[in-house]
Amino acid sequence: MKIRALLPPEAIIVRADVQTKEAAIDLLAELHDQVGHLSDKEAYERDVWKREGECVTAIGMGMAVPHAKSRGVKERGVTVMTVPNGID
Image 1 (cartoon, one colour):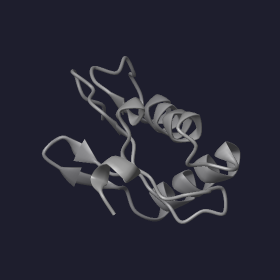
Image 2 (cartoon, rainbow, N blue to C red):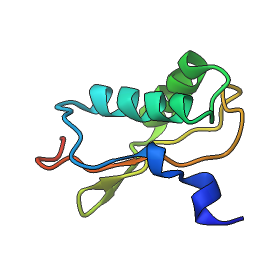
Image 3 (cartoon, rainbow, N blue to C red):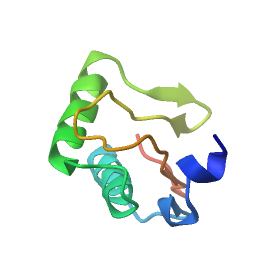
Image 4 (spheres, one colour):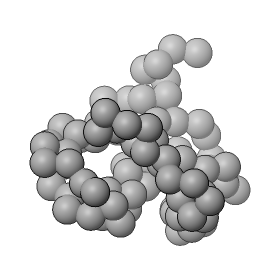
């Protein structure tokens, strides 16, 4: 599978205007939904938050990979955003 199949250009936001972790995860879930990765956005977000409660998905160097296994996912995919000032 090619990366383009997992990460369409519409699933990328450069310089996202988000101030909180909650807003960032909501925006990433919205992107997943808009490009057709999700069948149930609310279930997906709930599962991402459950995963965050088990162990944060920050990987260092200003990067995080919020993710979860979820029945709300219709097909595998990736969304990406940059946040100029970062988020705690």
